[in-house]
Length: 167
Image 1: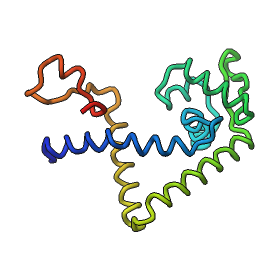
Image 2 (image 1 turned 90 degrees about the horizontal axis):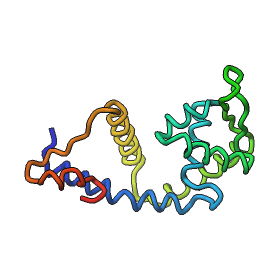
Image 3 (image 1 turned 90 degrees about the vertical axis):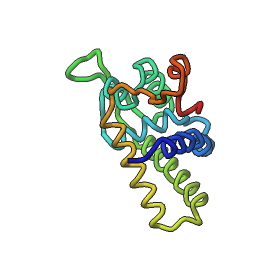
Image 4 (image 1 turned 180 degrees about the horizontal axis):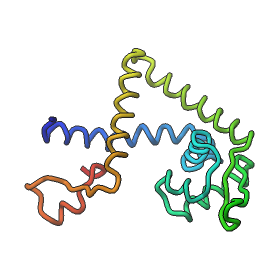
């Protein structure tokens, strides 16, 4: 098992990863922020779904999900229709224009990654992808589990404010 110095370095790398996310966000069109791109991606991956399911997958409040859906519907990238099982609910459908937008986003992202990782081998890219999938799965496995920082050298007040983002 890794020791504290390795986990501390991992926390620093997670904090620094923000620069990668910001760079990826810069390539998105101005009318398709990252939240909208996430909704399009989830609808393409999982198919039509209720707003409540989308909120769950995004791990955000229904009000945030509603704003994303309204933004996408205004652009014609999704269609909202009444849920036949419960007329109060809405089912979200990806439109052909939404699929085209998603294809454009994918092309931009792949082009940027190919450019930034041009000096990486195919094996290194595959290894990174596999490790990131494994990391995500590890966190999915422990959703809802309490997260406690185990640093006896920190005071109780530091313990509640210390996060990987501000380490």
